[in-house]
Length: 329
Image (cartoon, rainbow, N blue to C red; front, side):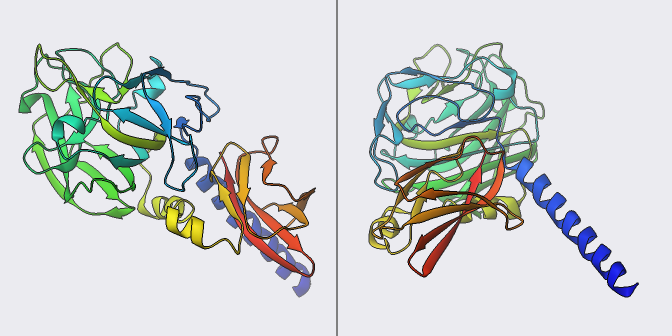
């Protein structure tokens, strides 16, 4: 009798933990994800592909060629599809990797999620003119660029030029925003007076924004990678979890090849593998420890047939093995 009760308790505990894990995984799925790995496709299930207007592919933070996007600061940008999902209501989260090439605020207008000339509308990300600090802004749709048309949250960190930075922007409300700079919530200050978010009927853009009435737009100068939008406010623990899986920089990637490196991670299920070790097999394992499939070792693996969630890849050579966690969006 006691054994039966204990067994049932263990089952209930396992199901509870598994359900929590699944709910957490569902929160990790963005409504759009541009990896910029040689194309402008959306790797989420929504297929909100972007269109290029002069941006070019470049080496990413891990030294992988044609795996990020470069904007020249003159006339290059990309158009987003005119979809409601890409104009999120509050709360929402936006994340990306960015490398600035200029200290001028004119070159730091990263995106505007509904671009209409001579109108302060939607959500946009730029830098504060006086300080050079990152800023996330919501706008109430006025046909002007005065303080009453926007509410801005300016981070405490001055932008570093020439360095890849991992940024998460979390907006709960007009007076509850945060910018995570390399995954740290660094604090900041508010300015402006708008308390509502109004989008234009136009599509959004990445790489440009108009800052003054009846003047030409400013264009972003720098590099961008892994741009994502969530229709929820991710909490700090989830952001830390995502950062733990995406903190690999160029030096560690090139200098620590004794264990396999998997990229991109998270992905839609297609992963590339880099290692100095010639493994024999790759075993795919789910969260409850069940083997899904065993493959001969290769420098890539296609798991797009699997459901979204957390899995483990076990790399086997002789009597030793290495295990890496992966996330399929």
